[in-house]
Length: 431
Ligand SMILES: Cc1ncc(COP(=O)(O)O)c(C=O)c1O
View 1 (cartoon, rainbow, N blue to C red):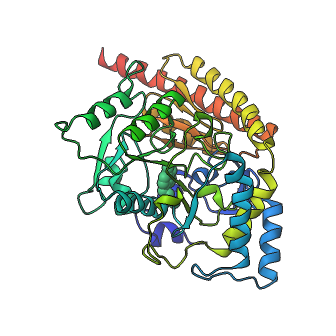
View 2 (cartoon, rainbow, N blue to C red; view 1 turned 180 degrees about the vertical axis):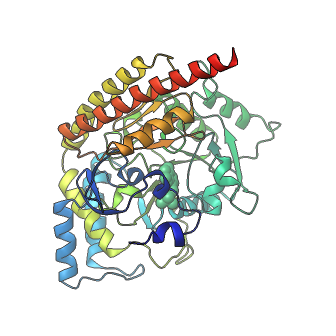
View 3 (spheres, helix red, strand yellow; view 1 turned 90 degrees about the vertical axis):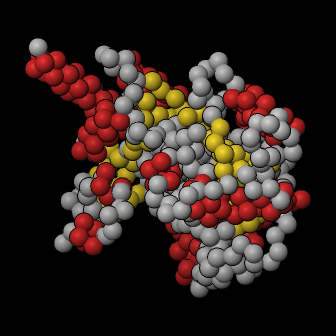
């Protein structure tokens, strides 16, 4: 087979560089390539496959729907599949959590949901500034990009990103400093230079930004500051939602109620592109079709998303299972960190969104590429790529989790030793 990807695909391609093989099939937590090699998945399509690849129950529902000539495409016309998803989402997710939200189906990417959320808060308040946080990632279309912190993405926008002010995220200025107090102060002071914002947009755990965790107290304080100053609160739950941290929404345990929530990635449950904005009913000031898009609420995704809710969200079994696996994962990652002779490593995250901060991108990159060679797919995150991010499917078996962790541990130990030898050689040569 010619390497069409290397020859014909734009330079913008990225994951095919990190995982240089050609994949053919995938099932549960395993991918297979053209050579018949199997890879354990600690990546899950960057959090899109919380229930694994080709989940049999979801697949059957999809096949049945296609076989029955169910509507595949319908713009945002009412369909049985859409109605059934909405009723199920309301019954299994919103009502038990006493949440009252209107649902807006946007274009299928997470970035488009963020674009819509930003328009909602700006249009309803009549203000243009939105507060985003250091290390935030909200997507790469222009509005979402303006709320994304990384220069790597911002520099590629072609226009100066506008309409956003960045504030330090929880922990950015060190453990003792509550950065929500700083926001409170800025908002009280008409001389602060900060235009009164429409909203704050926040990830409860910054996935792309390096698995930075916002503490519950910080989130509660952020919500209070927003309420005090009439600023809306958007939680971008695109990566950390749909059970990734345990509960369906990542903000549940903090007890906060955002005004707007964005969901995407694992919402369809099957890897089908699908995005949703939840907004408090009083914020729904849209005129018909103002934020449109050809692929709003794709019917195949409605079918699998509903199946995923029925399969996993009728009770709290999945949430408890994530908690159990999280404890195993954290303990093993901590062992890896403790084994680092140079003490560069630390562990952070929540649920099955945990990261090993290696202190530098070189070491993290070495661990990830050796893991790939050894049959484990795992990616780095953070502006300098120094965090090895573990995002296995939530449904991974205990044996698979242990097998993946064995690979990770071996690769980390080898990388620590290689780096130590190289440092020794450099020091020796310098003498
Ligand atoms: C928190 C968050 N928001 C938004 C996005 C953008 O989603 P998409 O890549 O589907 O546009 C991502 C993608 O990684 C994300 O992690």
